[in-house]
Every structure is written in C-alpha cells, then in structure tokens.
Image 1 (cartoon, rainbow, N blue to C red):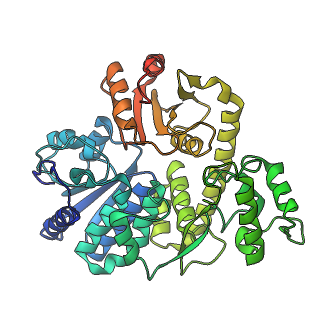
Image 2: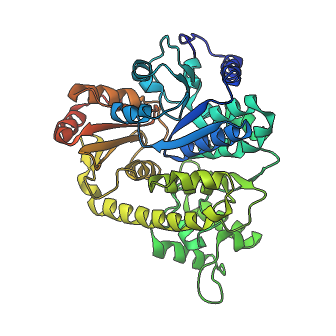
Image 3: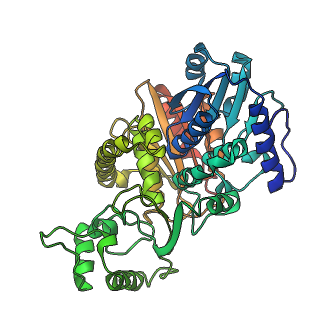
Length: 465
C-alpha cells in the first residue's frame, strides 16, 4: 500500500497485484543493501521471519534479524539506531506507520495482517485488511510467503511455514479458506492431509493425556480429568499401555482401537449440539519422522509458539530452516512450555470463582503468570466450554517494565468486534498500545492504571452486545 487508500470493494486479484507490485519494488533494490528484519515473537511472526530470511538468503542479500513482543516508540527508537538500508516489519508495524515515517526516511516494507487505520503513506504496506479480507483467509506468514514466491518460484518449498503461521493464529477450522487454501495447494508436495479425530498431540503425547487435555472437541467426564481419561480407555477395553505400563501414543494404536475411541467420544457427547463433530484435518509433513512435533503441522505451530514465548525465536527460525541441531533443544523448550501450561491452568482452576465481573471474565494474574503466556491462557479458556459462547475474557499479567499485558478473547463463535471494544476502553485511561484482531487482541498499560482499567472494563454493560 504505497500511497493507497482503503478500497471499497475487495477482490483477490487486487491483493495479489499489491503483493506482486511490492515484490517488484524490492527487486529494484541494490544487491549491496543491508536489510534489517523485525518480526513478532509468536508462531506467525517466527514463520514470517523464517520465510523472509530464506528468501533473502536465496537472493544473496545481507541482513540481520530481531524479534520483539510488541512495537512501541521506545523499541522503534532502538531499532532505528542501527545502520541499515532497508527495513522489514513482519507480523507487526501496521499500527506504527506514522511513527515509522516520522523517524526514518529509509526504504520500509510492512508485511502484516493486523487491522490499522489506512491512510496515505510512502511505506510499502502489504496487508490483507486493506481489502477487507476475512481474518481466516491469510496470516502474516501467508503474506510473506506470497511475497517470497513473487521474488523466486523456488520459494514454494516454504509454503508449509505459511500454513504453520496460519495454524498458530487459529485460521484453520475444518480446512483452510481463501488465499490459505491456495497456499495449501503449493504445499501438496510437502504435506499429506488426512481426516481423523480432532486431537492435539497425536504424534507426541500418551493417549491418556491426549484425551485429558482435549478441549476441542470437549469430552464430558474426560476433558480435564486424569482419572476420567484412564477410566474412559479402560471402559472401552483398549490395550492402551506398553509392556512397561506407560501409555502408548495415539499414533501407536491400531485402526480398530482408534475407531473405538472415536465412537466412545461421540456417545459421551450425545447431549452436545453436534456430538459427531469430532473430526478434522491433520496436516502431516512427509519428510519428518513419526513421533516428533515436527511431523504434525499443528504440533509444529505449538512448538514455534513455545520457543517464542520462552524468548528463543532464533531457535524457532532454525527449526523452520531445518537445522538438525535445533531439534533437540526445541524439545526441551517444549517440555518446559507444557509444564508452564499445567502450572498456569492449576492456578486458574484454583482461582476461577473470583474472575466473573458483570458478565465478563477478568483474570488478573499479576505476577502468577508470565506476560508471554497470558494470551495462551485466554485462548485455552475460550475453547474449554467453561463459559458460554460470546463470553468476553480479559486476561492480565505484569510485565518486567512496570507495564501490564492484556489479552482479550471471545469464547466460542462470535461476530463481536472485541478489538474495537478493547481499544475504546484503553483510550479512556490513556493513549496506550492496543491492537490485534476482531476476536483476539491485546494491549499494554502502565501498572498504575491497573485498577482504573479493571473498573472501566467492569462498568461496560454493552460489551457483549
């Protein structure tokens, strides 16, 4: 979007033309240009960064990489102190266009998918919200992939990274749509797509833990219960244990046992609206070995989120670029990430009765949960069936810099524009960073505004309407 105003009517070809034009602009750059890449720390940000890194390597450009939790004025000042000719912002930057323009006259590309106030700019902004694409159509890593593909058709081998980023941003629901579905076609040589029970952890978790932690689909008397999961398997007469007594992984069970499990789940869900709605797509990387989180794209996306949340984005990029040495270290991070989630959910369950406020869930974790994990908690809760569809959840955690991270989510399927609602509330207490998407967004406020923010949220009665 170099000098583009927001269009009144979107067509897919308009957006693809914008990507092509932007890539052609990049091709005109001097090969001696030094490029600085700034990416977000989550799965989509790491996938985006990895795609651009590989694309620039193939074009023989010199570059450096930095991944950040958020882009505020202080961080932007630090970034601009460095010597560079070209700046890439990936999975962030759209909401900072005015500040970026004020602070630098260098060539800037923003490849992002977060909503922003569109206006005239010299910066090259490639963002699907300019053309009002539906949120699930493409993530920032998809934008980066299509940009990289315009630079070099050989970058088609990065298509699976774009889909991993889309997975991390929860854009896969019973399949991919829009431009993500086109990217999936590019990934056919890399991925197998199989239909199966919509379980997470089939490649890596013991079957009892797969069932215990299964929130989508929710399994009555099993989800959230260690004893319930084991009883469920025993009642079905499934030989789910190894000779040493440990539970097998789901991928180690035979087809007949998996049929018993799926039938048993459907029977357990007969009081649900769609009890048989337990199947979905599994995206399997052909060249990876079984039994690792790199095999299943959804588990791979979780692994990238884990390394990002633990401040190891360079490890995530190494994984995306198939560095064998990175695999072992990433498994250790994933183990720590899982432990942190268990501790986080334990804290939540012990305190959940105190979180309801005027029809909204306000979780003020303070220092009990890391600010990098508070969004993960909010996302897990929205899928847990603990609260009815449409319930808005605000989760808060203290940061190290005298600020509070706020993550907001809507439980179930809802058309409510949570981003606009959160932005309105934050503006009432000050001019602080706030952004994200319609059903998943966040903000940062000073710690001394904590009570004022909670009061403002609690007093809004129209937020769910």
